[in-house]
Amino acid sequence: MSVYPFKEKTIDGKEISLQDYQGKALLIVNVASKCGFTPQYEGLEKLYKKYKDQGFEILGFPCNQFGAQEPGTEADIQSFCSLTYGVNFPMFSKVDVNGANADPLYKYLTSEKPGILGTEAIKWNFTKFLIDKNGEPVKRYGSADKPESLEADIEKVLKA
Figure 1 (cartoon, rainbow, N blue to C red):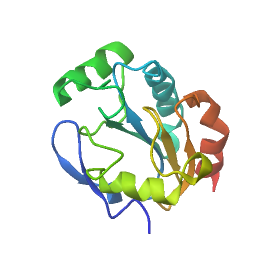
Figure 2: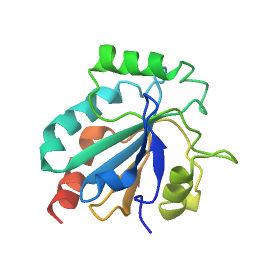
Figure 3: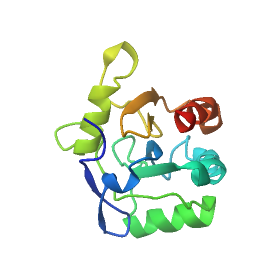
Figure 4: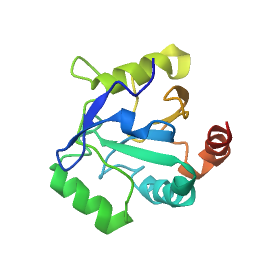
């Protein structure tokens, strides 16, 4: 199994297949605009700019499940990300990452790469999943893992 069978809605409402990213390394991140970790958008954008021409994409999934820190509409989120952090990487519609209504992609990611002590639940915003060029999850990172600390792992996946 891989991430490729999943279909997701972009932040502007278009349905796309993750198959479109076949052959690329991905970093899938649940994001929020009003979180203590929100400044990570800056580091994520730097990673995106540095590696996008080498076959790397970041996919941002807004989520309002943690402290209601993503209350806005898709348009609000898109405007905030663009104006505040200059985000150019693909953003998707707001999703749940935990619970009965969790997005199927997130159910897959958390089952493949559980967190500390084997828990599948995502604990907070800006949890990151590194996906290899075959669409398979390689590693899970917590909210406190800064984007720049992922560079060595991203480079390994890009060279594989």
